[in-house]
Length: 108
Image (cartoon, rainbow, N blue to C red; front, side):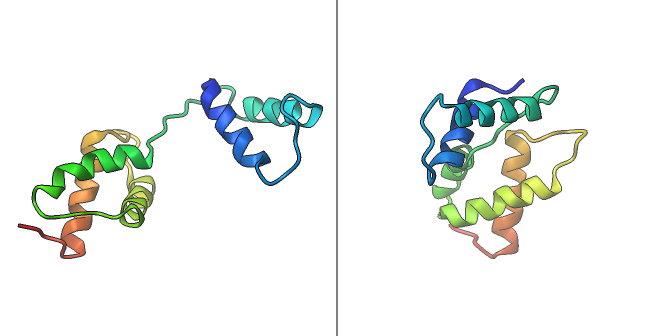
C-alpha cells in the first residue's frame, strides 16, 4: 500500500552511501523488505515543500520562516496531531500560527 515513488526514494536514500547496483539481489531484497513493512498500512506524507507553501502566506504579514523553523514545526505537528482529525492544511496552518506566536515572530 505504498506508492512506488516512496519506495524508490527510500531505496535511493538507503543505498546512496553504499555500492548497490540497481535491481541487484541486495537492492531487490531491500525493496521487498520495505514493501513487506508497509503492506497493510497507509502512508500519508507531508513534505517541507507543503509547509513552505503555507508559510508563503505569512510573508505578506512580514513573517519569514526558515527551512529549519519549518522542520521544527513539522516535528511539532508530528508529535501533536490528533488521530481523530488527522493532519491537514488547517492543522499545519494552526501549528505555524502557534509557532509564530510562541516565538514572538509577529510581522507587520
